[in-house]
Image (cartoon, rainbow, N blue to C red; front, side, top):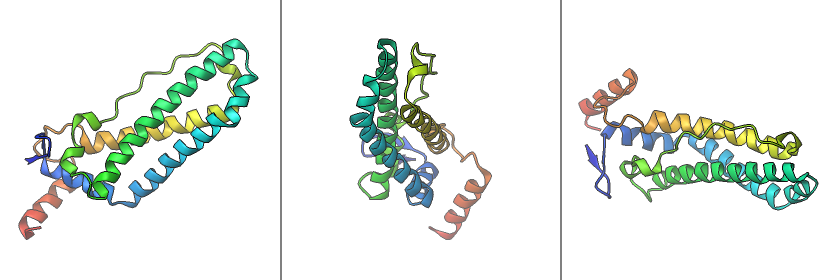
Length: 171
């Protein structure tokens, strides 16, 4: 077992998986996409979105405010997760620390139908849809990389063989 700087334990293969992911092209693309979506959303909500929301009925404006808050929260969670992974990549955080529960993504609540949602402007709906798809992909990555840390062996047979090779050749 590896012990993080905060005293948490992490299974050695899990820290290796985290480190490998953080150094991957998939991480680079996901990080770029996530941070780009954060910037695009902020630009919309602070610019054209303000004008779009002024054109809505009272019910539509309430739906707009609700949806934009959920969108912002979702993207803040995505950005936080991505920044933890980048900290591992850049050596500012050890992979064992990134395994701590406080850095995990949570399953989001199911979206309920909002009264006035039919009035929401298409640019906001596009951002909401893209943020859901990104969140779902990152949640999937999070689950594959971090969940079930109590397992003594990696769940994937290739990873298990990889660890055996590392042990045999002293890497």
